[in-house]
Length: 231
Image (cartoon, rainbow, N blue to C red; front, side):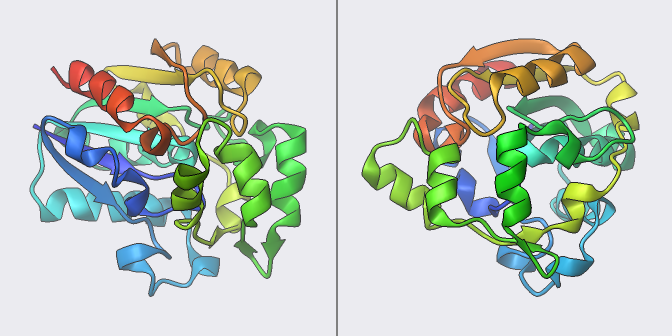
């Protein structure tokens, strides 16, 4: 049994560094194309299919089975594609304040208008770049100064195209148990939008009283939930 951790937009696999030591099973944190171990990939060319292929490649390279697939934020649109690629390897899915817009729509259609304006202003030449001040307001509201600095130091550029690509949620129709972690102090993927995703998926729901980056601000609490779900 193992955890496979998929990061959201603007981060890489190292966003899970604080969480992994508290997990009670093997954990693999995936770098999606364009950052970390896959930094050589040009961001402007990255698609949602590429993101799912990266997860599949890492799972198959380690021959992982009986996987708890954990997707944070933007990974909500990568996870269903992974489920279609390697369904036989996935035991359960856990979404952490994950963006899940209606099938066939875009991620940009499913974020708060105020946040969407910030995102669109952060796109230059096909690359989504978050400035520290804006990211701090959206992502670090539940952190002390040192923790916020550590989180913001890990910000990474992302592909703007992913935000406007039509999503394919067909993988969520597979008979794989699904849990949604509702983050009650999230100022990035806000309450109304989390509830829309929950209503769309009808998953088991667990509340966690944190902001958007629970794996950094509350790693022990998040790990306790994941360990319990893992069983």
